[in-house]
Each structure stands twice: as structure tokens, then as C-alpha cells.
Image 1 (cartoon, rainbow, N blue to C red):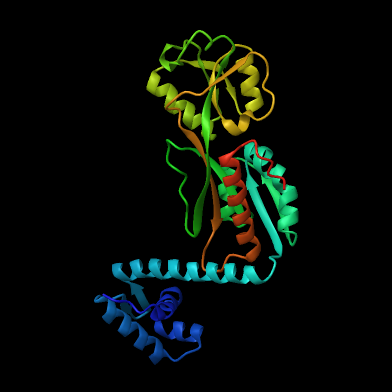
Image 2 (cartoon, rainbow, N blue to C red):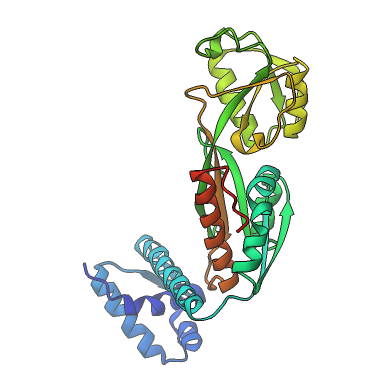
Length: 310
């Protein structure tokens, strides 16, 4: 089987418009030209791609597979055109970017001066929100780019139609325990700890990680529940429990009464960028924003102490 890719736009037009005549109108060609391209494409594939009905056409199983392939090719071509165009002119426009507290405070906010310098024609609007809100706002097109978190040992949230995900960095989990809890241990063994695990607001990646680790050990939970990392550190410092926190949440000075330990097998928090990539080409501004976030995340992954402001 050898498919002539030049026929795919005709087939996409048929699938999107529901028939040969409507596709011909959309493409500004004759219906016979569209029918001819469809016939040749079916001959190349070796299977029927559509079923003709009085109301138009419906896709066969092979047709649905080919539509997915054609849309992927179309998207890649659109993105390539945008990237090529961006090499000859500076991107302009607006990017609405949503993320969560620790990524904004540790990675994104410090890099804003660099954004202003490198992407001087692109205005960025930053929104902090929960993961559920970020996913909803991306679906509704209220945000152009989101950066979300999830435990690497758990399933990623479903992508949804027309959404692409790009991994940014893996943020290792650290064990946070009251001072003196770990000092007597030459090697930290979680199963020997008798400190209860703090409860975590259920939608956070931290909740997924704590649940994964605590359940495997069969250890008890504390009575307290937290959402904010500063609350978690305060409760740990008070001796009320232990938890896991990502490395990004531990930048700066920690409160007294807290011990931090690297423990093999804890895994990491995955940070991933998501953006819409449907039938319309992604704007130059959004593509530039995606490339920028990938660059600064790679720098931060290599060395969290690096100054990413310039």
C-alpha cells in the first residue's frame, strides 16, 4: 500500500463536510475532481473509505483511521509552516498561560524578564488555578497553554480531542518529616517510621504520590488535611505528621523542625505542557511560548540553582 499524500486534503474535506458535493464547494473544485481523488485513494488503500447514503457519506473503520492520520499530517504541516514563518519574523500576539503555584513561583515568574527580552512582541497573561480548572479552561479555549502536574506513578489525565501534551520536567518527591524522625536512621526505611501521613487535598499530584506510598506500606493517616505546601511544612514542623513534597516546593529557606530526605523509590512529579492543536494552525505567539517553556524547563531540570531570568 502506497498512499499519495496529496489526496488526503480531499478526503479530509469529504469527512468534515459530510459528502463529495459539500467537499467540492469547500475546496472550490468540481465534484468530479473530488470523486476522482477519493476513488484513487481507496484504490491505493485497498479498502472502501466511505459508505454512501442518501444523506451523504459515513466513514468506514479504515476511513476513520485514515482521517486520524490525515489530521496528524495536516497539523504537522501547519506547525512546520508556523515555525518556518517564525524564523523570518518576530512573533507577536498574546499567550494566556495557566499553571499551579510551585511552577509559577519557582520557574515561570523568575523567567519573565527573559520572556520580555526574547519574546518582546508576545504579551503573556498568567493564571494560577487547580488542575481541574486548568484542564477545563484549555478545553473552553480560555487558556492557550497550561502546565499541569501529576504523579509519575499514576495515569495522566485524559488529553481530550485536539489536545497535545509535551513533557517538561520530572520533579523528584522528597520525604518531609518532623526534625529528629530520620536522624537515627543511617538509611531511611519508610516502613520503620511511626509518624502518620498528613492528608492532602485529593486533586493534587501530591495526594496521588502520598496515597501510592502510604497504601503500599499500610501506614496510618493523620487527622489534618492540607492544600498549600506552606501549610504542610508548618504541620510537619509541629510534629503532626509527614508527607511528600516535590523539589520545586522546597526552594528557599525551610522552617525549623523539618527534615528532608531523598528516599529511593519515591518517584517524581511530572510537569507537562498541554495546548490545543486542532484544525486551525497554532499561532506564532503560542508556538514561541511553548518553545520558551521547554527551554527554561530543560535549564531548570539540569540545574535548579541556575538563574533563568536572563
